[in-house]
Image 1 (cartoon, helix red, strand yellow):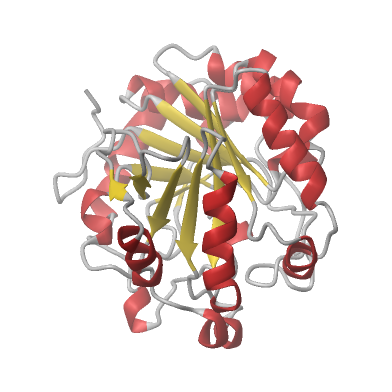
Image 2 (tube, rainbow, N blue to C red):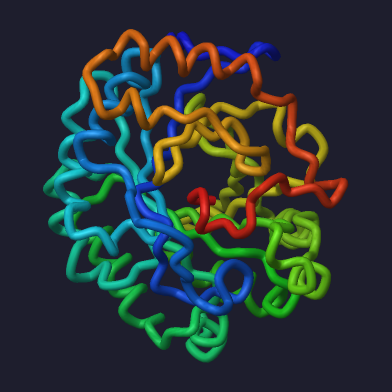
Length: 325
């Protein structure tokens, strides 16, 4: 039972830890001009990740996701995965990656203890993938995903941002993609951030476009697990995989929130689209676990009921790579 509860009765079993703000892709909706260094890259060390993981595990967190930026830019990522997976109480160790050199790294990550893999693929059209990401690497990314399935990574998922330009053809292509692959493809509604206002105005479409498409073709929603993220996934008897939607603009989206975030610089982020954060870095450099857990629990008093995206307010989030999405 989680000991992490906010003022609205929500319990938290799921922690996302960003290990870097650096990303080597230039996605149109996030970092169209590429990563720009804004200060010293004093990101969390393996020891600090270990300490924050143990504190949250003691408080009832059982699922931890490593994010970025792009986490694989860190050469010590296998060590971080191994240390997280060895933490008592952590049952699931997940990673979100853009798939850069996934085919070279996935075996080492699996051996280190990775249980859940999310790969970002915004289009299955090679030219569109290159246009969105700035890199012609679709084939190697898919090869890495298929390798993850082949070596037995327990859970493999695909994340794609829902963009106006790719709606109809994109749905058809991803349905074919999961016909034989036991993976979940989740489309994420494009979210307004501090840096993407013009792109958002041009490319945002509501998630109902996807759910209408799915239901018209016989796809049906499946039950959610207690530690699932925010996606609603749909299944079909003729397909090995699933298709889902993360719809942050839907009414009540935040009511079932079960996740917290640690930034790459050691702040506890109560909401992706909130303001500031609670600094834990000083306590991550020592061994006072009780003080660390007390600060975490005290911080939950300030967690808001929900974000304000529908009002065009995205907090101080400039782009999603900043806090790990």
